[in-house]
Amino acid sequence: MGWKETAEPVLTRMPAVARPEGHVPFRRKLGWTAGVLVLYFFLTNVFLYGLPSGGAGSDAFGQFRTILAGGQGTILQLGIGPIVTASIVLQLLGGADLLGLDTQNPRDQALYQGLQKLLVVVMVVLTGLPMVFAGNFLPVSPALAQQYGVATVKWLMFAQIFVGGLLILFMDEVISKWGVGSGIGLFIIAGVSQRLIGGLFAWEALGTNYNGFFPTWVGILTGAVQVRSPLTPGGLNDIFLQQGQIIALFTTLAIFGIVVYAESVRVEIPLSHARVKGARGRFPVKLIYASVLPMILVRALQANVQFLGRILNSQWQGMPAWLGTYTTAGGIAEPTGGLFYYLAPIYSPQDWIPALGPRTLDILVRIGVDLTFMVIGGAIFAIFWVETTDMGPEATARQIQNSGMQIPGFRQSPGVIEKVLERYIPQVTVIGGALVGLLAVGANMLGTIGQVSGTGLLLTVSITYKLYEEIAEEQLMEMHPMMRQMFSND
Image (cartoon, rainbow, N blue to C red; front, side):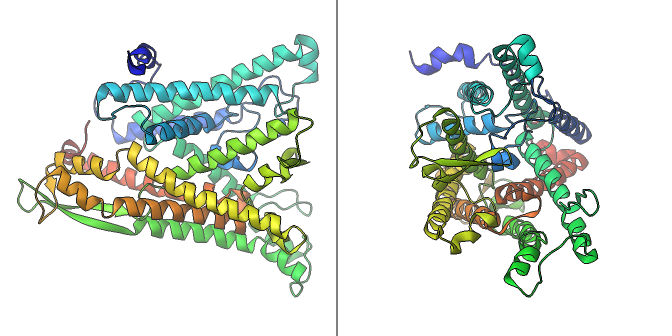
C-alpha cells in the first residue's frame, strides 16, 4: 500500500471552504473580498492576551514582516509565513517528483490540497512554539504570570497564535474560491500599502519627529528639521538617504514603472480556432511569466534561516562566533558577524554604505551572497512555480488543445504545440525570475518609502496589476455572459 492510500482518509477529510455551486456574481465576489480584508485588518489589531501592557516583544520576522503580512504581537502573529513555508516544501517535493501526484487527476488533486493544508497546520505549530517558548519574542505579562503561572499563560498565547494561523489559511481560501484574486496577495498589498501611506504622510508631533516623506520636507523647508549643508558629503547623505529620502522616493517610483512595463513586455503566439473560421486569438508569454510570487518563497526561506539564527542566539549561550554574533537594536536581534550575517539580506542603504570603512570585505561578501541567492533562487523557484501551477509547456499545450485552438501553420497536436511553447516558456521563466530577484536586491540597497523592502514593493505592484486585469476580465464576463460560458468553468 502506497503513501497515497494510507494518507487519503486523513487528507480528504481536512476542513475546507465549500466551492460555489455556480457562477458567483462580480459584486458578490467584491463583497467577500472586502469582508475578508476588513476581518484581516481587525485581526491585525487584536493583540494576544498574555502580553504585557505596552509591549509586544521583538518581531521574530524582523524586516521580512512586510512580505509575510500579519502583525507583531497580534493574533495574526505568524501572518502568511506557514502557508508560504508549506508551499516551499511542496514545491521542492514536487520538483523532485517525490510525491507521485498528478494534479490533472481529481483524486490526486484533492490529496495535494489536503497535504498542503496539513503542512500549513504543521508549520503553524513548528513556527508558533519557538515564538512563544524561546527567544523572548513574545514576553509574558508579569501580573498574569504571577496569577496563572508562566507556562499556562504561554500555552494560552500559543493557542491564540494557532487559531490565528488557521484563520488566515481559511481567509485565503475564501478569497480564492469566493472572491477576487488570492488572499495571500491581498494581505501583502494591505500590509505594504499601510506602510507606504505611512511613509509618505505619517506626521508626528510638529517640531519633534517627522516620519513621513512630505512632513519631513515641510520640516526641512521651515527649519524644524535640521540637516547639514547640502554642499557637504554629510548634507548630501541627509537629503538623499537619511531624512530627505530622495533616493527612496525615486526607487519606489522606479519600481512601480519597471514592474508595470515588465508586465506589458510579452511574446504573443498567434492562435486560431480549428473549427470556427476567422476566430483568432493570442497566447501571451510575459517577461515575468511566473509572476513575482515565487519571490515570496525565496524571501520566506531567508526569513526562516534568520528566525533559526535568532532562536539559536537566544537559547545557545555558547554559540560560536563563526556561526553568528548578534546585537539588539530596536528590540530586534540582528546578526553583525558570522554565517548568519552573511546569509542576511541587504535591508537598506545603511547596510552597505559603510563598505568604505574597515568592514568592506564583509559587506561585499554579504551583498554577493544576497544577490546570488535572490537571482538563482528566483530562477529556480520560478521554474518550480510554473511546473506546479500547470503553466509549463506541456500543461499549457494541453489547455490550448482542449479549447479547440491551434497555432496557424502547425499540425493540431498537443505535442506540436508543446514544442513551439518550449522555445519561449522555459527561457522566459528563468530570465523573469532572475530579473525579479535582481530588482528586489537593488530596491533594498537603495531603500524605499516606508521601508517596505524591495520585495514587498515588487509584490505589491505586480499583484495589484494582476488584480486590475482580473477585475477587468470579471467585468467583461459579467457584461457578456456568453463569453463566460465559453471561457469559464462556472
